[in-house]
Length: 512
Image (tube, rainbow, N blue to C red):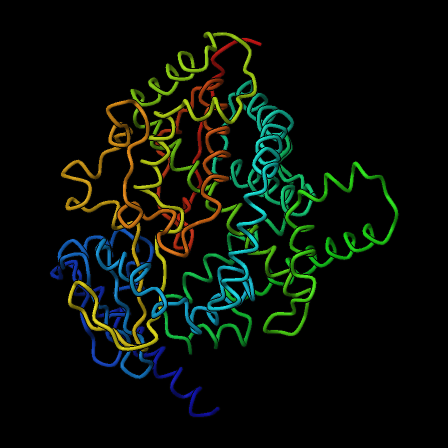
């Protein structure tokens, strides 16, 4: 133990000295990271953590889409970054079984426990099969649609109405996070946290989510001994992560116990049928005898639910935030979506907004193309980590082994000219439209937002449905203007969020 603490001290001092030297020399350095003695290229990652995704993108563009970042020599932490579609396809599909999440991912993302995103092999296969069967139930997507519309009418529109009348500045990212947080809890466990209302109440669990994601990002790019030391003494982001885990245990276990009590009590058949659509009911039924790696049935269910809450809250809210930022910068595209709503749905300008059914949503191809563009440029999960089991050679020619972390970089992939052309940095929804006016197919190993292969996102249809409803509702009813001078920066996090939110002002288009 004493030796480990000595190593930690030496590492910290060396890191500080290296960062200082890095600062002094930065004026004459290129964007390529320096391979320092002992520390490898880790100082460069830390120095550029505020612009991590753009920094890695610039490196990948200079190195043929794949680059090995050397880590500190004493911790076996080399990271291979790649945005090469051939590598992505090979790792995610062709040789899938050699590239699981791995034990180090499970340790880093320990908050997810035995949930679908933190496990491999048989447990992952069980989760995927069960979750897909629940998602594919005929009435589930209808419930998603109904829940989303209810939250539009009872939560989002009343808040936007008040803010537009006051001409108040508002953080649209915060609004979307509250909306999706309430929605996913309602869908999964039939519980409304009520974080989205006119008074915008403080909710410590919702706030803890964001802080925990920042901590997970730090864990991903620094040596294990560093974040474990912070965890031991409950310092910095590790304290936030610990608090988030305690809050999730407190809330979800409480909901589990209440559900068990309702199952014991006699209640009306209609309510039982409604609850049967909730994911919690389905998981409790399907996982009746599952105890997971912790030999604890309730924890297994809790981890399952928490993973879905993470996915349902963060990916959708992040995408909607970047989507409206891009529309504010591209008024022509915004106008085309408005025109599509009027012509394809037959809603005349000035008419009262109404619910749109699933079939009608399919007609809004330009809107879906615009959402796909936002996802291409700003994927909610910008990096997908993998860990090779055995020594292997990638299609790019790079050799990897069990000590190599692999980061499949979807953010960089969306900015590669070799994939998207010279206009890859432009927001062009038209690139997604076929000659017939529908959505053009793009292989999933090139448009990797929803991943590809066996781990393809099973909530894709669910997410797109929710995003279309929210986007169409806001666009039809309001003009969204980003506040002048508001800084737009990415937050160092495992989810691609804005560091300072998205401050906007709303102008209502039509009188009530």
